[in-house]
Image 1 (cartoon, one colour):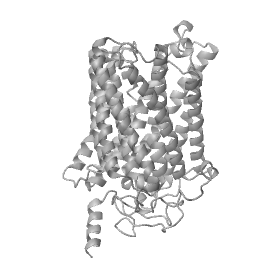
Image 2 (cartoon, rainbow, N blue to C red):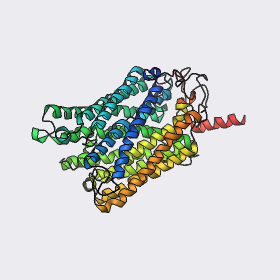
Image 3 (cartoon, rainbow, N blue to C red):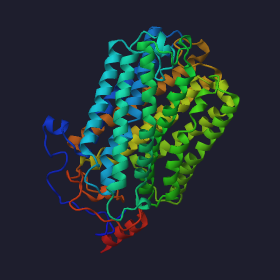
Image 4 (cartoon, rainbow, N blue to C red):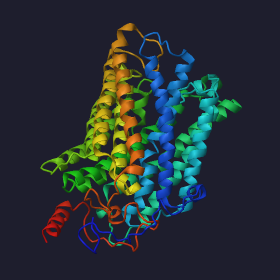
Length: 551
């Protein structure tokens, strides 16, 4: 979108020598900062650490599964490895990645504000996140936990002798970070938008961040309560989930999935917001159906709270309830399909440039579509019984949660890296990395659809020899994927010292964040911008640039 001062991206902040990165170099200046941009960087470093930990556990799992006998580790260790992988990746990488890193950095910049509504609360949310993360890391390093990331009862509440409580406490604490971040975003978007920035002029990333925040605030307390009840049953022997004590184990599944299914959309909705920013920029077009893309975010958020029961098709749930949840699960596909259709229509007759962010956005659409279509299989009662708790489910949620989130997260990091650091990265290496990740991901997880359809259960340490070829293919893909992930870590770090200095708007993008310096000054804008135009007016922007070049 454009400010009143000019139709083209301009620098409304003075070309200051002091920016948010150079505004103090001491450790204290970073650990006590209330600048949303610095807090975004702190989250970036934190979740990168957790991503490496979760990735190492996954690497050991895939190495172990290369042989049917599971020769690398013992069964107990295998159980702890897949639990560690799931817990770390879901709660400490996938859920916080885009909201906490890109959301913290971008939300105030995109709406023309100087900071979030509650800067100190924002810093507190990072400390809470780190305390929860370190508590969980202690549990994993001290002995680990073997319940799986779903903590199904009564195994987790009564029988498991591993570090269930310490892990649950870590996740419980981290939940507060998620709630604080969501509250901060909601208040900020409501109260701190620049003059003229109406709801229908907002960037689509803001729409998705708002919808995600609603889920974070409304859903997170439920999983916190579920884990608290596990603790009460485990420590005090209360009969909540254990049938021997008069409890109901299915109750835990209801509570857990009431949060954890919407949690999928905490991961995917911000990803959709990132893709909705990248595609118009690199297709040089307005997004097709702006309002439909925006409202579909809210539709997904609402439907996300109504479909938890499809995780309980084989848990003794009544057939009537199963039919209702099956229908609702199909309905949630509609707003998701609206987004994919609109992104595709936005590309039609666009002037497309295949820069790295665009490659990641296209990869996201491909992987998300594959995951979404196979989700329809799981929403069907009969098919779900056949593939329930098999590798088909593993492949499905990795395509949605990991493929979708990681592709969009990396696309967003590359898109806003010049703004974040003031440096450009090596475009050639970045494109190679994007292609490697896409190919490695598909080689890793597509064979798992076949494995699941053929009947290989998930979470099994030892398996029949007939499944070895597909498991070896999957492990080979994981190796390519690991190399692809290592690339960005290398060339992005390299760019910090040797990359070309980034201009304020290297992609010729619309949006208020591109109208300040790269990296932005601490105050974001020298004066509050006033918005008078619709978002994503790329045709007008390109005409202005052409006129400027010819004059």
